[in-house]
Length: 319
Length: 276
Image (cartoon, rainbow over all chains, first blue to last red; front, side, top):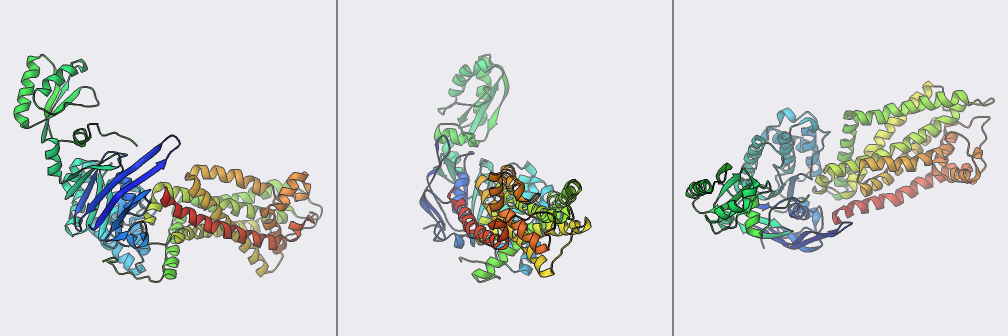
């Protein structure tokens, strides 16, 4: 059994209008000291999976274990092994950074002295000195996430759950937070990280599980997944939406892969083997066909491409 | 490997007490920092004492009696009962903000969080109580009994509001919206505090309302406090109903009943949060 093991987790609940299958047979296994990324769109079941593993919610059926301890049967023991940081496990906005960290330390049953000491250490470590004595409410998103993350690390837990740690952050804060997480990971913590960003999973994880409709639909390292969905894309943006059908026809002459039409109704793309050559070719054939372009270029696969390729449908933005 | 860090506080009871104290402290820090709570806790009760006293006591003349003496216990009771609303709205807000989920991933006891919630609110209510007592003195209200009796009255008021905090905490977890809590509380507490003997003796009410007012636990609370403060003024009739004549035991039983029902109910509801 792996260090973290989830076996056929199902979580169904009823709303007024329908039955929602938040998880529909999700299985995971994460070796000790590795970082697993759960990648998927909103509503795919990432957060539900983390909530079950962190004892916040019980599964309708299925089992999960951390270091052999059942999350449903011995939640108290699980809570001594885990640190949680995410959108739903927040810090108190009215308390200062220091007060939040001290309080969490006390609730892990550190003595008042040790809780204070640990709070101060983390404030140094996470560069939160200016935030230490001001209520969290006034902080920037990046600073708040750092406090949140520091809260998860009070007792240096062997297992860390990071639920969309950088969603909503500006690029600079995201890079800063990535650095913090990378440092942690190199210290040997076992991490489960959820994200909507392929690049984030790419940067931080050893292995990725792609989730859709409450199930793992693909698993592997980011390189393996990318190989699976094609290396690079040629993408063109058309001046007139009327040209889409002809544009698609032209692009499909470049590759065997399905041509992908973006939501804007003007942009089409296709996975290709040799992107630079194919881009030149694309420009030539569009010019010959007299189709005007707004933009053309190569790009790396995105989450949308992963989904299109793996599921045949676009990543839905369910709330 | 299961526990990789030094646990300083050991033993279930010690941990429970420590957790309760830590979460109580959190609520007290907020009291200092949140102007909204400050107004709610101190300014509003002072305003109520002044307003009701000057509006009503001026208009209601009692031959040889003193309406201020009669009124004050009613205002105290009304204010501390309304004070329990905060337990519910704060609980709903904490759930909404995700703070509760953070706590639920920590190795703290389930009950501790709720004890901390209600105990912190007890501190808030005690502050309100102190502000009202001082304002009451300033407008001429007096304690005409002994200090132990007066302390017992204050204890009843705070005990009753504490018991009601547990009711509100349960409602707060059930509706999960701070705004709804305030509306529900208004709909429940407004009739409960006004259809009582707070402002006028229940004898003056039409029969159905009179029966409600006589059996209203808030009336028993107010009557018991009037007796204990030595505030049964001449000129205002005291109902000879069973509940009025036995106000003190009824309040004590009422407080105990609320606690016995709503503490376990709230803890069960809290544990059931994992089921959704």
